[in-house]
Image (spheres, helix red, strand yellow):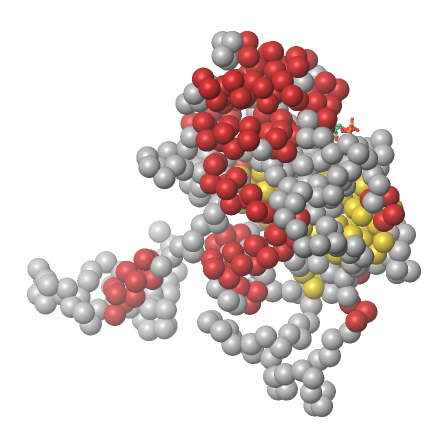
Amino acid sequence: MSTSKRPVTTTDAGIPAASDEFSLTAGPDGPILLQDHYLLQKMAQFNRERVPERVVHAKGGGAHGFFEVTEDVSPWCKAHFLGEKGRRTPVLARFSTVAQEMGSADTVRDPRGFALKFYTQEGNYDLVGNNTPVFFIRDPQKFQDFIHSQKRRADNHLRDNNMQWDFWTLSPESAHQVAILMTDRGIPRSWRHMNGYGSHTFLWENAGGKKFWVKYHFKTVQGIENFTAADAQAVAAEDKDYHLRDLYNSIAKGDAPEWRLEMQVMPFEDAADYRFNPFDLTKVWPHTDYPNIPIGRMVLDRNPANYFAEIEQASFEPANMVRGIGPSPDKMLLGRLFSYPDAHRHRIGTNYLELPVNRPQCPRHSYNRDGAMRHDNPPDPVYAPNSFGGPQADPAFELPNWQVEAGEIARTAYTKHAKDDDFIQPGTLYRTVLSDSDRDHMVSNIAGHASDGVTSDMQKRVIEYWGRVDADLGRRVAAALGGA
Ligand code: NDP
């Protein structure tokens, strides 16, 4: 016990409290008195401690660090934070599982979120990626349904592999992402040992106005390491927070994880007649067509001091793009431009961008004002245009755009490219990227998942789905499921 003088506990209004132990009562045996304001404040505050957990990406952790430019990026992009070799920008990263809940185990089979916030001098730039380069669907119309299929049933409140395979087998565009999920990469050993991908295609513009479609790849310098399904289960039984603890402990002991940022760069004109739709989030761009070009590194070297303030309330939104960087016609990205800030307004509140972790670290001159918990409104004049010297927008900051040849308003798939097939890329992954033992693990991971509460009719669809990815894979899944 320290003998130094301890501060007196106070209420949140700073009034010294008389006891941390006893409620104010009428006599030693009560009843408790309503005038015990300190007690009431403690109880009321406690009831309100949680903000709603994220519907997706609820369980996670993160850290602070920096991004450093290591190559000349000016041929492709004029973003200020990429503007000079050696330039460093503060970064916040948050890693997470996708479909799991707040208290769930880290070492489960699920994609991992890889969300980044770059505090640039021209505003915050957010990149909300995953540890896989593709996604289950390509149209935001299906996102809510997809997530519902991954979450709990309406009747018994249990998760249900049968409904997961139902959605996947009815949505052939999911095959590539499910294939990756069922390889060993579906359970990373730690957040430090996985890559991060921007996944979507973005539009870059250089100072001369030339445009390029790009994809971001953050390659782990620690190397890819995964858990087998059995090891992951054993770890989950011992420590549900294994990934959270691993990241925290390695940074605490000075072992700062690092990722190399490599870009795939597609000349703007290539997109129109590329052999498949380059904006389709279920597809990668083969490296033989667009090799990865290293441009920088990200290092995470500072743990949060206050998890709730710095990680739980961290609000990433892909709509935060800075000069030189714009969206692409990827419909999933366009949908997410709305859904992320909408989620933050609901979870955190109208003024979520006021919190230190979300505020830009550069001057801000917005005319937005007021609302719950606002504490530093902009000064007069409070409107634009004005003749009193208030901030003025500048067309030089328009984000890059593309020309739309829209045609009639429609609800359809993307315009067809020659090879828009859903099964080619997962087939290539299975046949040419995976080793023999990777393939063995993939088959047993699929069979393990599809034999846990999955009906035999559904298993037939599972076999057919994998047979379309690769005939040998289909046969092996059938054999592993007992010839369903
Ligand atoms: P490459 O041989 O050039 O690339 C293969 C890629 O596969 C590498 O980036 C490698 O990542 C990654 N990889 C290795 N093992 C796995 C796994 N178990 N799960 C997911 N990815 C893995 O060929 P292509 O560019 O032509 O791509 C072939 C296939 O590789 C694609 O159809 C896709 O399934 C997969 N892939 C492709 C990526 C791309 O951007 N082109 C990115 C990731 C996967 P690493 O370098 O980290 O080992």
